[in-house]
Image (cartoon, rainbow, N blue to C red):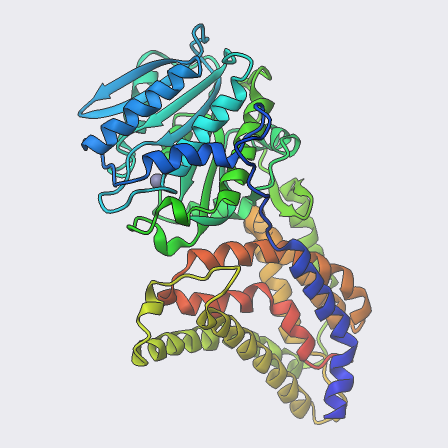
Amino acid sequence: MSAFLARVSPRAPLVVAAGVALVVAWPRLPAAKPASAPPAAFAAERALVHIRAWAVTPRPSGSPAHAAVVDAAEAELERLGFVVAREETRGLTNLVASAPEAPPDGGVWLVAHSDTVAVSPGAADDGLGLGVAMEAARALAVDGVPRDLHVLLTDGEEEGLLGAESHAAGVAGRGALQEPRVVLNVEARGTEGPAYMFQLAGPSAALLDVWQASGCTAQATSLARAVYDQLPNDTDFTVFRRAGWWGYDFALIGGAARYHSPEDTPEHLDPRSVQQVGDCVTGLARGWLGRGVSSDAVDAARVYFQVPGGTVVVPPALVQTFGLAALLALPRPRGWAASVGLGAWLVAPFVAGMGGFGLYRLILALGLDSWERGTIEMAAPAPWYVAAAALGMAVAAGLAWLGGLLEARLRGREDPPVGWGWHAATIALAAVAACAVPTAGYVLVPGAWVSVFLARGVPRLAVVPALLAGLVVTPVLCAIYPALTTGMLPILTVVPVLLLGWLLGPVAPARP
Ligand SMILES: [Zn+2]
């Protein structure tokens, strides 16, 4: 036991560093501003006045409830000084609000959809978008409606992005845009938690310049786009992106169990989340208004991610370089027994996944079916989610440790083995991901450097990369968990193994 402790204790600082990073990088929400906030500020309480009035009953396309909300939004936008046009096609009604003498092209577009699914009052989906568009438009038009500011409320989103499609087709029918539009679209797959800007359209470098200057505190990572492109979900933003317009797509994902349900009510919509999205939309709109959009801007891909205090933007080549360098910095193994850890690493995700599946079956067998509809709430995680994450970590840590023991046995010596195989696998995964998909692979690179220093027998040097790894991994874990349901427990057990393999490495015996 004391030999075990002697091996583990040099790595204790790593665990502390990762813990500090976890606390520091945990996504936080701003306080909701009251209705008495200064007129030029976005105030969540003023946005909520609209949301509470409009998200009373479901308002599917074509229903009287929907027509009433469209009428109310039209009246409100006219009161703010906009000229409002109705686009009526195939029973749909889009609202387009612009300054009295708006130029035909370009401009900043606040976008939301006015319809809901048939069973949900849609306070978040997309009452949030409506309320944010109204309050942001009011704040931006305090000294008169800016010439370049527009509001677009689409219909038929829930039926398959119909309103957005017909609007985009109408614009295309009038000839190519001389200047791209900048779209700020707000959506919801949940009712609370941090806001996510989960996809960009247009030249990343220019969009991220304005983003960094906007003071927006929403979570943003290029990883989200890489993942989202693989999912079947679509928002109106997809239509605009295909049309060649630029912009930012926002969503709430916390409390995903209420998505498209009767529970998506104003009481469940967190005012702090409304404030965060609203601050971002207002700040970005101010950044783009009057800036002018150059249609020949080069679309240079960028890797970006959130750290405490802001968004880091780096060129993909930097991620690729650090990923490859980690692979080159890995010491040569001493004999074939050193690769036993590799086998342990390869098995870990499968064993963890099967454990997650077993846990899920157990929940059903115990009659805890209500968990099936539950999702993790980051503020008060349901015990099963914590158990699932802990199970994944424990399985991986156990396998890393067993791999190390086996390695020592095969070598036929008493001295602790390196755990080379485990570290090599962590590094190889990171290097491949960083080179192939740097926008997503960046998340594994700092952890790879933890493994490099552990494999070289200098755990003290691994503290800095451990801190960085914790900073980049934490927001990703916080984003993944609320989006999953109990049926996806195997994912909850596997993901920590892949993202935190470097943290589990410390349990594998280390000294050469
Ligand atoms: Zn929606």
